[in-house]
Every structure is written in structure tokens, then in C-alpha cells.
Image (cartoon, rainbow over the protein chains, first blue to last red):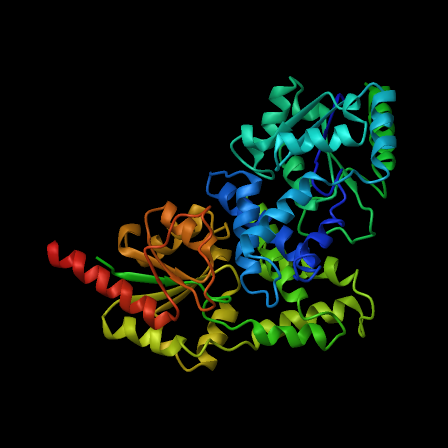
Length: 231
Length: 231
């Protein structure tokens, strides 16, 4: 039975696309957003693989500083450009499909929390700005777990904090690596595939997939009821 | 005392720049190389953080398939484009400074092996093509360690295979995350910084830094002799 849904935040709830303007505004190419975000996760996961952890903003700043150093024609100093992107994250909005998705869980009586590799403050601001903070019981950050997702400890932390066994928790995210990590500790998984991307074969298949949070919510709820009906 | 140098392969010995042509040849932007390489490491590290491992070519193909799917104007099917890039890796050459660097270790009587997150075959072909295979005692791959670097097990594997305690091993790489992982298990570290990039503050500082493999080799040898002189 599904009791708790754990939602990823960056790119799952928040739309990162407006961040491209933070790059072009300082003379850097818009596509650097993709290299930067992948590189930030790469270095955060490297720390996790070695049993360590640093705040997302520290990792993101270090990676971005290295990338911007090699950009010709930057119109502001590197430090200022880095600050601009990190500030841009704080100003992001949720994807249009998020409020309906959150309501679907709420209507079905499923508890909802967030678990981010970023900061608690950023999750808080994002949900407040979208007017959906009351649909999320609690915001959790890996900063308090000591390991970034997809380290197993991060998921166990959420399960323990909410007093719900992993078997009754579902992880919902746009990132296959996040769902693979959650599946590894026994969670159900829901993949939001907004862009029509093939699932990477190196990772364990998600339990359900949908193009919006609401689609994933309905699929998880349906699948849980079906199992509950036999229980 | 320095007894064994463990060299990273991709981007440390090999020059990845020619791979950009594999992207532009099929109608993809050249900068996708950077996002792809960062994303491949991201997903490989995600597996390592969860205690698993998949071959570099599988991870690289999965990530590249996802990226190319969203490229407009690709001139060949996605599978073919993915195959072209993976074949391109097999055809890479070493950086110009590599042969001199390998000779510096050899002249000083320091043993040299490679330890790659990629395949043994690719390391072998790269060194053969450069005519420096005889300067490298052995090629090792994390495929046999069960964990990609920077998981601690990968470095321990190299140390055990060569019967040299980690304290007498130095890891040499262009990637800060690799040196951070090696430092975590007690290895000396040498950073090749060919482009003048600031060291990311989130990772433990390298023991020595230089703009070429030969510079790093001389610095490691000097520093080892200095310590040995007091021993």
C-alpha cells in the first residue's frame, strides 16, 4: 500500500529553463546550463560515493566557476556570474502540471514530502511561491541525511523521518538515477517523463511512468489500490 | 616513498577534443560532448554510490541516446550517432605531453599503471597507438574492481593488484573528483591542469599540480625524494 510519496525538487517540481537567461545575461552560452547541472550532480555523487557530502550551492558554485573560467566574452567577473545563476535557482517556478499532481495525492489521502539534493530554503520558497506549500506535509534535504541521493542513506533518511517503511513509500522524479537509487532500497518509483526521453537501460525500470506529475500520481494511486484490493 | 603511479586514462592521457567532430558529423552541436561526458560520469557515479557498476560504454550509450533524442536536425538515426561517438573514443590519441611524462617516471624507476573507468581494450589501443605501451607496466579497469572511481574500492583494487600499499601510490589525473577519491584512501595525488582551471574547493587539494604530465611527474618524484631523504 502507498502511504507516502517522496518528491524530488530540482527539475522535477521546478522548471530550470529560465536559468538559461542567467547564462546568456552574462555572455555565457545557454547550453552551459546542461553541462553545469550534469557536472554538479557528477561531483555531488562523487562525494557520496566516497561517503561525504557538501551543500548543493557549494558544489554548484565550484563546478560553475571552472566552466565559466573558460568562457570567452563573459561580461561580468566569474564570481558575479556564479552568484547570478545561484540566485536564479531561488527564483524558479514549478512546472505547470505540479499543482494538479499534488492535489491528486492529497485527494487520495496519500502523504507527500519533498526530498532534495538542494537546500530546504529553496524547496520552501518554491512551494510557497506556487501557492502549494499546504499540499506538502514536509520538506526534507539530504543536507540532514549526510549523503546526496542516490546514496541509499538519503532515501532511508526520508523513510525514517516520516516513520513510513520504504515498502510503503514511492519516489517520484524526472531523473532516472534518482529512481534507480530509490528502487534499490525497496521503494516504488514514478518517473515523470515530460519530454519523451527513452529510459536509460542501465537503470532499473520505474514502477510507473507518465508525462506529468498528475499522470504519475494517478498511476501510483491506481496501482496501489489494485494491490490493496488483494491485501 | 613513491613506488607506484596510477594514471587515469580518459581525458588525462587521451585528448577528447577530436570527439567533437563525431557530434558535428551527425548534425549535433559540438558542445554536447561536454554535457555527455559529465552526464556519463554522473550516472556511473550514481551506480557506484549505490554499490553497483556497469561498463562505461553502456552508461555512455544510455546517456547519449537520451541527449541525441532531443537534437533537431540529426542526419543519421540516434543509434548510429551513438555508435559513431563510441567508435570515436577508440580512435583517440594521447595528449602531446604524455610520452615525456611517462619517460620521467620510467627514468626515476617509478612503476606506472593505468586505472580507467573505461575498458581495458581502449587503454591498450591508446597506449599502443602512441608507441608508449612499454612505459606502462599494466592496464587496469574498474570493470574488474566492481566500482567506478571515485569509489574507494576502485583505488584499493589497483593497490592490491600491484601489491603496493596505498601510501606508496600516487594517483595522477585531470579530474579533481578522481584525486579527491584517491586522497580519501591515503594516496598521494598529482593534478594535471592543462587549461588553467581553478581547483574546486569542495575537493581535497592535490599533493602536486602541473600543466603537463611531465611537470606532475617531476614534482611527485622531487617530493618523494625529499621525504625519502629524511627517512
